[in-house]
Image (cartoon, helix red, strand yellow):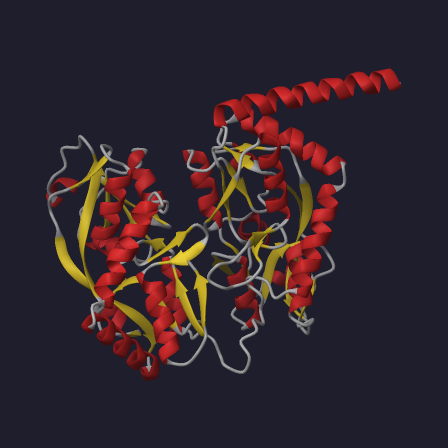
Length: 497
């Protein structure tokens, strides 16, 4: 038996060495790009909610172990959960992480690693709730994170009266906390953290909903990397490192506020909550895991004018105005066009920038006039005036509604659509990133004005925003901000599109 064990050990080392060396020779010093969503505690999360957060978690430890074995530095790219699959499938990221459940449907798009952890989906409800089983969930409002199997299970199996999808787990928790949702479906460990951090305001229903298995994801053609990662995963589990990592991060999240904590430590001053979609440079984007952009600095200045600490919440663009309207956020931003329809529901600041709408098509396309889009397939981002224009002004055969510009541009490149309607600044970035592949139609649709959005009646915040806008426009700071963040976005490689 010892001889057999010895031979197996030698074989294991030989295979490991071969895989590692072959990867290292071809990718030496090349960063391992990891796309992840950072509100999946304890798998991938931020240790704090400041502007320069540190990403941490079980998945982070595991991926860093893989990077160490391959001799490659690891670079994390934090994106909304559904974008993790887009980046990996397109080859813009090497690995996708953040408690990703293995399903046959997802396996058609990406390559999964071996299972590195298992968990249970559970329902979380207020402590005094009379919701005790799955049947009771059918009669109430239930929240879950967008793009997850939690949401799939909710829609396809439980089928509650109202389903509330949110971009991040932080937003799911917030909906539960402020009674917008009566219950929420999430991972068992996330539920335990939420209950502990909120002072037992909530409880986990005793009967679990279903079991799930987690894996890392890879591009379907990147079999070599997946094989190398699987060797590391097997060793990581058998050595007990996975268990130690889980214990470490559960303890960390119970003893530190963490990103997405329900009770951030702002003292006696209520934070100025700003919701935004960081996929619209140079207004708001992610610069190596940090929020950056004109709107970020402007929001900080407005909060300072109000003498309140700022707190940013990342949401899909389509959710920004609803959150402001119902009072869940103090301000909305990310290049929001001022329109008469929106002004009947929202209080806008004075305009701080103008933009022109453009239409992108593939290089080599004969489309040059709006009338030539009749009967074609066009795309636009959900919740935007570009979407309204595409639906109401173009006589397209079909309009595809994308969650963000990155997916829309990818749809154009992959021939899903014939044209994509976008703001001029974002269209220019897209053309620069995909040189020789897409171009603008010569037609430019009338300019729109951008403003910051506030709940009707919030004249104090609007007045503060107007003072900041006027001061920065007068001294040249506003124009300087646009030059600064346009340059930064080009320098980091136009990551958001």
